[in-house]
Image (cartoon, rainbow, N blue to C red; front, side, top):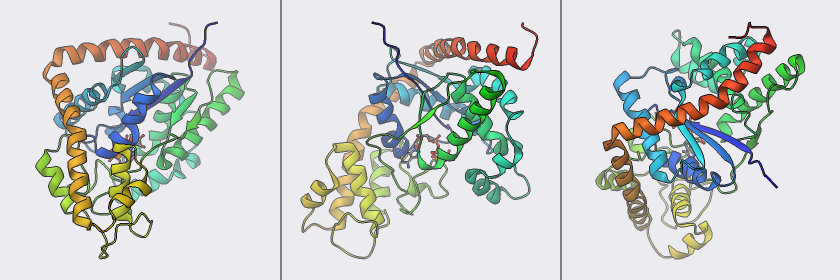
Amino acid sequence: MKTTKKIMVSGIQPTHKLTLGNYLGALKNWVKLQEEYQCYFFAVDLHAITTRQDPKELGNNTLFALATYLASGIDLNHATIFVQSHVRQHTELAWVLNCFTYMGELGRMTQYKDKSSRAGETIPVGLFTYPALMASDILLYQADLVPVGADQKQHLELTRDIAIRINNLYGPLFQVPEPYIPKIGARIMDLQNPEDKMSKSSSNEMGAIYLNDSPKEIEKKFKKAVTDSGSEITYSPDKPGIKNLIDIQSAITGKTPEELVLSYQGKMYGHLKIDTANLVTEELKPLQEKTQTYLKDKAELQNILRKGAEKAAEKAETTLRKVYSAVGFVPY
Ligand code: AQP
């Protein structure tokens, strides 16, 4: 009997080099998920320009992200990887979805409220309509599941609302996606401000481990990681800095926080910091080497991305045509 795999879609914004958070929180899971699901993984460059990007850096970061996907173990036999802007159906469907999304809904998005309050008077319209493009990313591929962290949950709910609204008007055009909460998923926090998520666009680069950081940089960042003034190594929310280091170790080694805490009995914070730095350095070393190998052969990388975009476009075009026809556009 032929079994059809469920479809899963996910992407990362190439707003900077990817971080240890992206690797432990997203990529490592993608590699596990790719066998069970039919996956579409892309670098969301269209989303990245909702905040100002240096054009050269954006291109470099996009290729770096995709080379990292491959280096992490994304297998082209299981998953389709591509650059979002290479598949024009994303923006085309996004326009249609924009016409079925309400100003009130978009205005309620917490991420928009946060980011726009920082942008002041010069808020790009794209930042406001971003969730409609994200809905397009998902609905184009008829995704069953979307891995979501807490900050994307609201956007996925909006995607579901838009899909249901359009399906009610025109018939079942879209699969209504469900959130996928990873069974094991590390949430890696900023090393300088462990109450906040480690983020690519953190204002303090000392807070984030970038996947191209050298062993020296990694060591320096972990040595300077903010902890509390105590000395006993425990795993507790009131020691977020220590908890974060243990979570990082746990995500890499697969050991439980309890096991790790036991192994640090009688040891100092300094030991934990150095061990975490060494562990991260060792974990990233093969990843960095493989990423560089992919980046050195630009022609081959472009080739992989072109094939990925072609495969993605095939699926996306089927959905787009159905939608165009449903809203009354003359067939082309
Ligand atoms: N710190 C993190 N811990 C665990 N998972 C993380 N992810 C990101 N940061 C962490 C996961 O990576 C995927 C893609 O996220 P993204 O980079 O496209 O957007 P983001 O979550 O908004 O990450 P940034 O770094 O904060 O983005 P910028 O700085 O570009 O705005 C998601 O699966 C996310 O959960």
